[in-house]
Image (cartoon, rainbow, N blue to C red; front, side, top):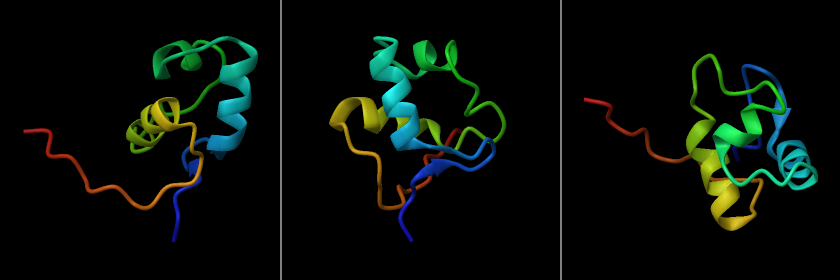
Length: 68
């Protein structure tokens, strides 16, 4: 199943991309100043970063990064 949204705040990446473009945001942190997402589990952070890098808004599940 593809990943298309921040689950905790039910924000689609396509919606976040539009908000980022409208507000000239170029990073996850700048976007979070404009809209609430990614504050709970933060599992969407790698996808939003990838969205900024590639412009994509639908992703295959990324491997979980080890935070040790």
